[in-house]
Image (tube, rainbow, N blue to C red; front, side, top):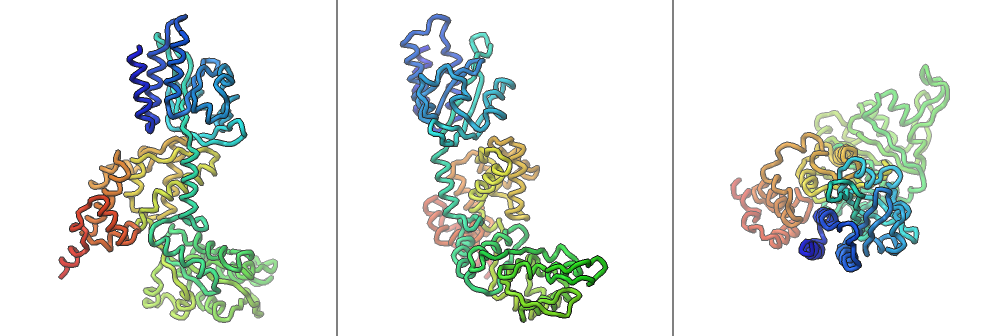
Length: 494
């Protein structure tokens, strides 16, 4: 018995960082070390408490009536409640967690006989502060296998939460998240662009966040206290689009029973966002060109013009220069629209932003669903980083929302992802699972170098970092510098 207790005391001190291992060891300890009736000596009690206090997580146990039977030092610190005050009390009176009434982890374990691992919740301490914790639960059984209560371990996530918020604050710009070189370059110039009154064209694939950038430009501009009005030009036929943009007067068409102001009038003094401007018809292009040139609109059915003071931000996934050459877009409209052009990178070209985006999006999803999120496992993150995202950030958000629902707020594992993530991954990326962060970074860089035949410039662009940063990382990670000297692809082409 003492040998087992000594071994656990040693392991509890050495393996503090792995909550799952600690949790399993503690459950085994309690089950194996439960004394015979009437043999609980003061020495044995002190020794058991010493072992519990050596664990770097909050630990408490309850009997079948939910009364607290043990309570360690970290549990005291987390709750602000002394051990002697907690013992014998119902657990919900001490922890006041946000899942006590509806999703109590211990209750789920006692009812299903299945442990809960890495659930996230908030407890309310004696000062009334909400403390984020990651918790795990399991059954306690006696030597006959009968259930005698439950055990719960809690890891304080306050520091983790603080670091996450600091990181997001550093790399979040008006709800746009990114730390990659392309995104930081955009963040650097957005304030200057916002200060001007010039028309802006945002170019990027679907789901790259064009409307977020348009809103950021508006919110940073002198027009921020005036309306921001968005309209998707591709979603409406010409007749309706003309009425939506410029308004109409009573009697302009059969159902026009009253005057209706258009989106340009509603955006007066503010910003209008014209999404998918490359999809409008030639007739609409003429009308829009007049607005951009003369800053007046003419409502449908009217012969009078109305002056408008509106900042125009347009967006498209088209190559508008190519459309001009094909004749589907007026050249004069093109130059009116692209006074300032911003190219938004697809997600596959800024994979370094994916871990940050995952945290940001999961926090928002959890908030909307009024639940906590345990985050994603390393294996899941590896698969998310490896994917190419034809739908960009919008697709990533949809994937995470599905996974969050299927994981029931627990840790998101690969089986919670859509089917295309569960099959065979790229040969060079399957090894990411189970790796340390350093090993994962090395594998991702080596994979990108292979993809671009060792060309450092293209590899750096793919990873969303500067070539000089890539070089330093290759040195630090001991990646063969000759493999990535940037000359192999050039030499092959000569």
